[in-house]
Amino acid sequence: GAVVSQHPSWVICKSGTSVKIECRSLDFQATTMFWYRQFPKQSLMLMATSNEGSKATYEQGVEKDKFLINHASLTLSTLTVTSAHPEDSSFYICSAVGTAMMNTEAFFGQGTRLTVV
Amino acid sequence: AQRVTQPEKLLSVFKGAPVELKCNYSYSGSPELFWYVQYSRQRLQLLLRHISRESIKGFTADLNKGETSFHLKKPFAQEEDSAMYYCALSGAGSYQLTFGKGTKLSVIP
Image 1 (cartoon, chains in turn green, brown):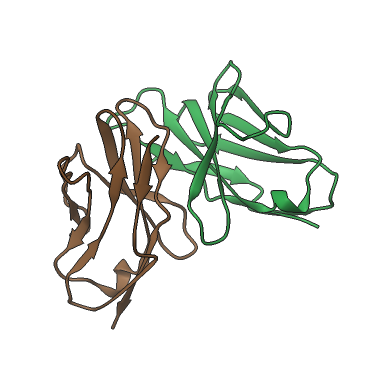
Image 2 (cartoon, rainbow over the protein chains, first blue to last red):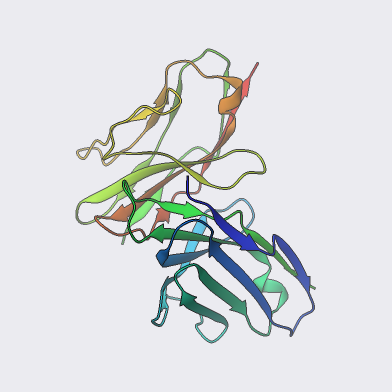
């Protein structure tokens, strides 16, 4: 199956700094990538939809200036948490959908655990 | 607004017993329904989708539009089925997923 890789798998940063999380589709091209956030013992919540070459579409309540998304190529999308605060600590997961795949489905990355101290 | 409800946070069954993980949804239109599974320390992966009408690892799920349900069933649970199961929906042709809160299935040997 198709592979989506996130980097880093975990990161600890100081409050006020920015953190970049990468999401790569390793063996397919993805026109669309999604970013989710998961709090402990809660469900995945869609944050934004990222389309290659265009601006991301953010879900209601998600600050676009805080969570910067860039989808510069068909295999890479990045999520930058700017001026991170402890309440941004969470598990961030991306998924990617291929451009031309039979029985298209969304493939998930392994997730990135962000801890802001 | 679309919503997915999984009423059970935790479900424990004995090995060989039948399993049913409940999922109800609300959506105005024709949704696509999915079950995702997350084994310990692994990423989320698709288990099955209603349009495929497949049986994967012995699991089946039937979309009941009248009851707006998409319950996941397996006649005989195996220890390796222990995992977190998420029900999800999307609009037709969309890959934006709305997830339920998940049910942790624990199969007791």
